[in-house]
Image (cartoon, rainbow, N blue to C red; front, side, top):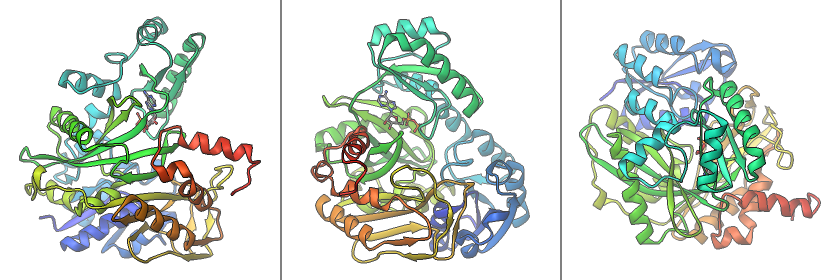
Length: 455
Ligand code: ADP
């Protein structure tokens, strides 16, 4: 087992990795930018190294500084968390070259799945259902037009290197395809450094259903069931739950098998997520694979009793998975709400000093956060400041606990989306589990119709 792990991240996920290290008896090294000195991940780590100024490109994305920090502190492994360098194949490769274990899949897997057009091709070859669309990248407008005619409008043009809901353009009217194609390429080049795009059929009211997988270094592979992440704003998840209210045991079985097939196709190692879109008619399609721990991993931990971060570390250290697929069961229900520092009406970020912070507790409540009273939310980084996760024996109990915990959560000094989250939980369609990726648009449209008044 490792003696010391460096955590190449900040915020709640850095703290989450420190919790796992502590439980495993491993020393944790925090890295931080100079404005993050007062962060909890720095406070609770065994050692800390400042890796540069505020801007992520100078600190949390600074490969040289992070590798140097690992060498100086004598860390034998690096946990990248999510975001930042977690899906950077070059970083994973450099770790290997420096004799530091990267806690994640092999660099070639990250590279292959990071190129979404290539991932699509791999899944087609492996026999995993994908949406009708291009084989790989689409080189010109003519090709895009021919494809769109074949699969039928609407289509979506997506950046091959895309992520975080960026670099996507939906086209419903054939007349808009040429300009959407060019804008998507320009946006992709600006955001990700590569202009490559691909085209696939756009589903109008799908659910986002993803499967958690775990593979060890000895060829054992399991899935830990699904998460439903259909409640999204601008393709970014807001509320996630496990299991999904939409899956019958039979559909779960089939989607789980497809997820394993997808992971098997790349001999997947460590924790990963296979994202699917589930259409209204019950067909499902591979969308992409995320080769890291997800923000929403706690809901899976809650229903399986498995600590995903500890498993990630054990797998990277070469330990075989301690369970087989047939040992895994779903226990109860779990729902997570992402709390962000932003105006709940305009969604404009609201950085600044948190003057009071009273987190809820009580039965079935878990809070993953690095925020506290006196903490200053910085404008340089992600606006998510906490994840509130409820668990119950049934969906209704989990939802009731989350709703109650949202009521008892006090965050003052900055604006947060707490009112919006309460609104979602109170929505009758949410209560019935009638979800789709259009859920938020519908809620926000209703809100507009009510002149922006909260119920
Ligand atoms: P990212 O890597 O940026 O998160 P994804 O490929 O995972 O991008 O897509 C993010 C979200 O965009 C999905 O959860 C879904 O809501 C929407 N989306 C992507 N592709 C399609 C599609 N073909 N049809 C309908 N919605 C889509």
